[in-house]
Image: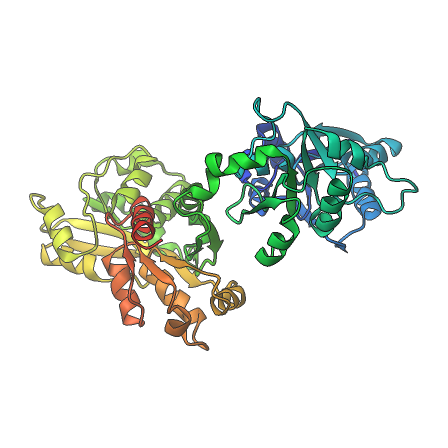
Length: 510
């Protein structure tokens, strides 16, 4: 027990798009000792939590409660009284049907300090992402937010259906999908025209967003046929008619495409963020784990003898990272490398080296023999010692070509790639259910490991209707050797090139 006073931050986690989180909310998550999150808070936000933070899920959806509200309240009180900083993430805004007021009262009654960090509520953001402005000077100048399921224990209802029906306001019902038929009927019974436009937006602001429109008379049937379920908001009013003109989010070029990312989780963020911005729904099934080798002594010995080398060649961003990690751990810095010339395979590796203040002297675009030979043309490497830090069991093309030019090549293991099979079961389920549109491969090892996840299944058969996207010809050759014919190949062989290739593919084949 600590004497430090604890504190609870009631944080609006926004409607689902991680980019809509406020700066203050992000800072609170980063500094928290405990993060308590619910069903509607994006799991991507947990990446901001400190490594040693305790992360607790208390999700509630449609009657399925991990913890009751009373137990959530007690959890917040207990953690704060232990002197901990608690980030309580609540979907949307904590004070807009988020029960944040109740939690604040409970904290106050126990003498626990708290702050409220407002968030973007789905009541305005989900319609906005569906192309529906909740106010518009030609339609209505006010909006009402209404709970879709009132507390059933209340003796009398506060729902003034006659006022709702007569009002020209946009009506936004939250958490009302199960009561949609009742809501529509009550509005019509109290005089709302049956042809009043209605929209339901499910998983608003995310790549899973689904929108169904109709009228008070037709919406129940249309929602049933579409199979739309919670979580969704209901928008009633003439502003819904603007969707055909103003829809923007679900017109993004990759909207609705479910794309598997096989890259190691620590490296996937760039690809994921680029695809998310284009509307894709990224499913992370990392097939490799990248880690420091068990024995780093060969790398340490090479660095201790660094003055014996004339060239340092990097084949990946991982090679750069782990080389410099070892260099710095040995108490050295970049001044130790001042006499060397550098070569990097690919522009991304070159950029990573530049992060350490070093400009690569040459840049072979690929591992292909002709690319390496062309890049080293004009360089006198005969008899020169070359240090090549890279993955264990890497391809032999590069050292072989350098040796043919007369170089003396020392290969050292900078890192290891291991199979990550944690996503095997959900992957197979999604493939069998035809829920995946494309799989991306960013290296030969991602292809090999991915197919090893399907060893007990008919891998090529499961992928029959799935687009295979490869980052370049070497990765494509590995895919072919395992029975997969790539539909998409990046050029240039980079993450941006892969994204552009996916865009071109789906423009040609919607």
